Image (tube, rainbow, N blue to C red; front, side, top):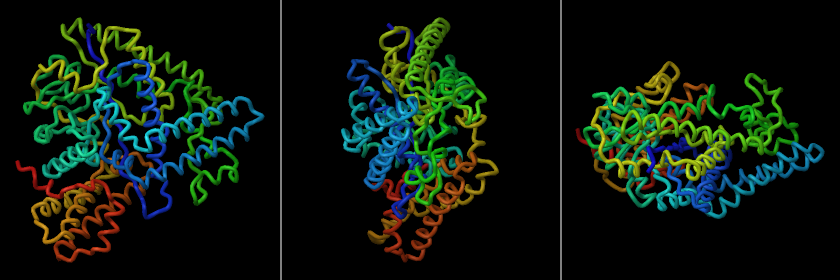
Length: 531
């Protein structure tokens, strides 16, 4: 019998970025990079574990915007074009570096990597959601949902109907996608406010995740801290992030991804290759960008980009195995220590952004693969579990009221409400008030019903926490501002047209084709929740 449990949780999310009105939009490559570097490597890892008899368990959120993009035929076609260009460039790199043994070795590494990605894509016929669902059906993955568009719940709490719509639309979308209701929800940005658990309970959810201090400072104080979930008064369970295991992986100061042997993210041939050579593979307007082929390693702390040594995947993989062993060793000691204090089986819940593994930390999928294998073969102190399985095994927990929290800077709401993005909230709140008003209407005809549903889509898309986050980080700010404004302007036009009972059918059809998320949405979600 294991002394405790380790629950790894990956949060797979990207904002809804789809631009059929344009031939090329750089931000669509957020999805393409994540498919190549994170989602397909994870699927290949899962398949390898199953093939080798490793009964792995993990929780993974697939957010509604990400699922919608992965299933979209337009984006699937554009991804194939993106991947074929990458493959063509990698083949050229082999030839270009034929007289440099190390660079040729790296170019051949990328040729094989991109070919593997293409084989996996073709094996699943481009349907990665169905691929993940296969591991849900086998019991290895506990796939959970998130807010419909990753709206930041605490900054919407004055409009419970708006929070309810984010929850209800997400749960309906999950059930339509996976053929069953979701068990849990990753609260967007792990942001909790008192009372949201009532809405989650009404939606049929069994648990949600928040940051550690949301559990540690619950009332009454939880006896076991974050090493056991707590139940809210509604019966919905709350899992809190374990700080120690999380920091080991994601911290830029002490975390594994900063090791000198690992690949340097910020040194890419899209910026360094001779311009006429790389021009066909950068932006159509000729601007350079990351293309995804990187030849250098981190080297040492403080090394400038010009000082980076050449990368070697062999030694990086060895380092990933070493780090996986270290992570396992630390969890074994942590769980042995906790079990002696608690006199019951502790749970270490370690959540991360999925895109850390592969995209930001190139070796991340290797690390996870080694960790699952080492945990299965090399220790007996803890059992890997996913959160639904844990609640089945450990149904008796303390009842507490969590504390308001998020996993952002300083643990509360500052990152999503500050001088860079505060201007958006009066507009979002006004739109929410108007949508709640529209939610009480009955349409006169099919055109009005389409308009009401599109109004709900536009508000949900405007509420995405990603736009406020990007404004705060200072990267791609014009795009985030443009997206916020465009969704609000579309919403306002629909609202005003409905007030005049003069819906512009031609314009509405164009907007439906662009913002086509949630095809089965029912705008009445905005009146379905009564206090």
